[in-house]
Length: 235
Image (cartoon, rainbow, N blue to C red; front, top):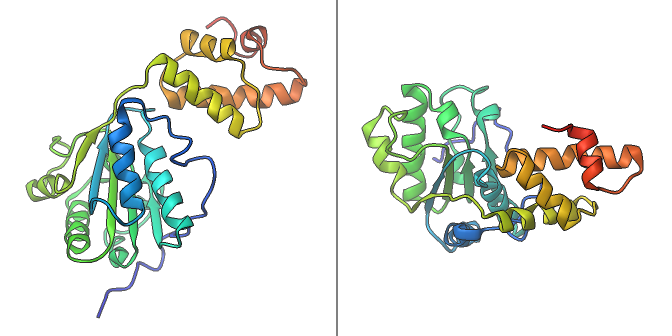
């Protein structure tokens, strides 16, 4: 008899328009994005592992995969540190019944042997069944934060990609696309100013864009470089 999915796990996933493959500016990560898209459609690799620093698009790829799978009526889950750390070590029991499993922030919740063993067992069950698994971490699978040697090898059972930084031109494209999604007009010179003057990882840039969006609405002003200076000061 198949095991039941852990009853307390928050498995609902509502498809959205923010994190999609269309809004993912891939740059030199186009192969990784292409494989994720295939896996999300149930026609690609059984297992994928993405790693790299903050703001490279790991979470975007995982959520885009879930979005695509859910829109195709496939059963999915997307789990991050917040959900996993609040659950006991057996939280992965039964997840292989879903068609796509996306696990984010591995380095933040693989903190003890019981969780490592739980993930090890899940990978084995996924390999034996019909489901697909995509994982993301700041660290490569052979990094020392994994104490269980067999788990390190299991994490490399599928393709492993280190995501790369976007060029400034690609960051500008990503910023303007996100602004457009939010109904905000972001002139190219303002986007270029943000990239040149402030922290340049995409997570931080998107956070600043969200602040500017609220400020622009509150002041009833268009986005300009003087407005950016007035909101953030001369950092």
